[in-house]
Image 1 (cartoon, rainbow, N blue to C red):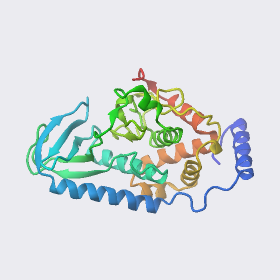
Image 2: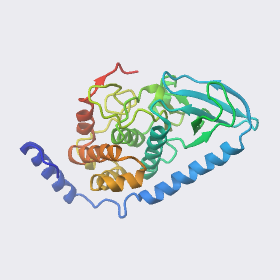
Image 3: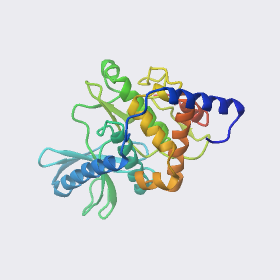
Image 4: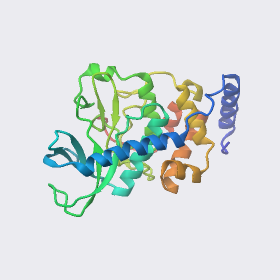
Length: 291
């Protein structure tokens, strides 16, 4: 347990007691190795599609900082070309870490697959020879949550809200406005624009995640302690909170600072519950107006 105040120590003891009294977490709870394998397989499948894509047309998409374009193939398929605002390496690391987390938590499609591509010739604002990020295009049946009907947002399950909120906190995502998540009429969720993660500067302008309590698609259940979370989320949080930084680096493909962020927030959720842990993080932000 990390050092803290007497009150924090008492809260932690109470939490440990509650965990001891509750049924054991699922045996062998989420196996990060299997999740990594599943993510890598999905990314390879996308890479094979990208390698054979014959471009027919393209359209520039919105985005203030990241350059983003939808590319249509002659076979009527499409993918998203983008240049992450914080660099290609950072964007790819962040997306893959979020993919693995979502897969461990039981929703492997919540974070779209992504691969890198070196362009053989120029396309729109992308130069020949430029290395870019290519992502699955989720436009078929999905809309940005800022444009989706209210009933679509209501269809998002409580479990999906909790999974997304947990992921956003673990990776310290600072740009989860409604435009940066997609939803369909069944309430399925896609987390897009993975760039604004693991930002360490306190006081930097940021959005409160729309999946946090009280927000437009925020979770609604009481989250005062670890055991309030769905079982698979509890298991992941405990495994991360007990892990070493080096293990998190290996398991999620992140650097040392990023692994430290994941570890810190996992311990916060374990010790305080999701709501208090999220509020502790939000208190360090200079919040932008929600949208």
